[in-house]
Length: 239
Ligand code: NI
Image (cartoon, rainbow, N blue to C red; front, side, top):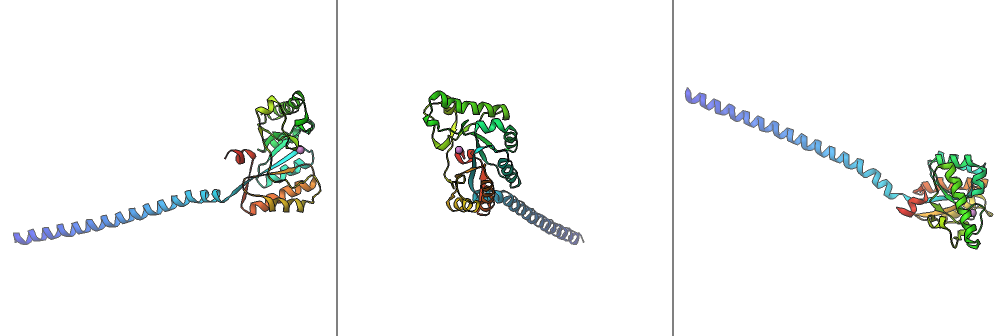
């Protein structure tokens, strides 16, 4: 009897041990499975945007000679609808006439640069005159936006021989020029840009006519479809 009880006790102990082991194994497998699921999920969350960013080619739209009271506003509205930021190189004489357009441009997050006061060839001016062209425009922009512009696009791409203000600024030229101000219909401007553009290019346009504004917005729509992302010039120059 004593022997039988001992045997029964041992058997119970064995059964309990086996059961406990089974429960533990199942739980361990569950933990492992949960861990795998969690890590797979977090891998997905991290991987998707990175892959998307790296696939997009950067390009910058720049607009010279504004602001224009009619066309710049139309352009700004079109860019806002498309969530695109651009860079504007403004003429001091236009800024003085249309400060509200400059305020809107600044408020909507575009980068504002200097394109001289009177659209003159700075290389042919005396040091004093060239400095005046740049400084006067910088001061005016500062009064309106609260910020001094960092970028200078000298008219015709000709830098001044000497100017203290220009020395403190970064000169920004361009890679793609469809001559939109000259003679093209908007569809010709679009096809020239779409044909010529490459990653990290800076496109030159002017926000001073209906055809340029129409072309600019069509360029945005087409290049977005072609895998481009629109950025301001600083992202092209420094990233
Ligand atoms: Ni110009």
